[in-house]
Length: 173
Image (tube, rainbow, N blue to C red):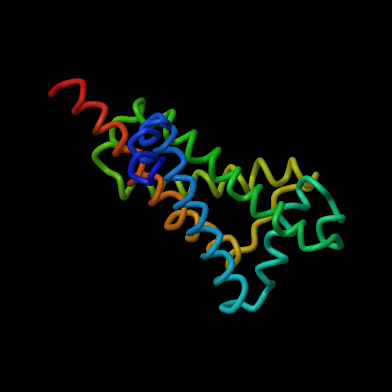
């Protein structure tokens, strides 16, 4: 008979530490960003609803169908949101060893990475996906930059170094 304790002992190390770190960063940053955007653009600024935020993300793949389709389109948007967070977490994880100050200046690294993510999303990715030139509206852009700095950049910058710290400690006991 398999108990939960036996199950945990058997499968505890089934995920590599690198994948576990990337998934942790993805889940934390993705959840914080989704929550922050939902609160900021919903109740605080009254611009949209949570469902419309995620339908908007899904529209990058499904076009206008995402806005008129069923609620599943919002779920697709949520899935795509986490896939995007996975990409940004993975990128940070991969380049972390090559940028020395990231290991010692996590706060600055996270804030700068959030700005980088905003720039790449708003000046490169979204214009390509939606076939439109980049736009900049100061209040909305400032809100977006701040959300990404604090809710994507910082969590990733504090989670990823744990992997490398443990890896270094294991290499030099």
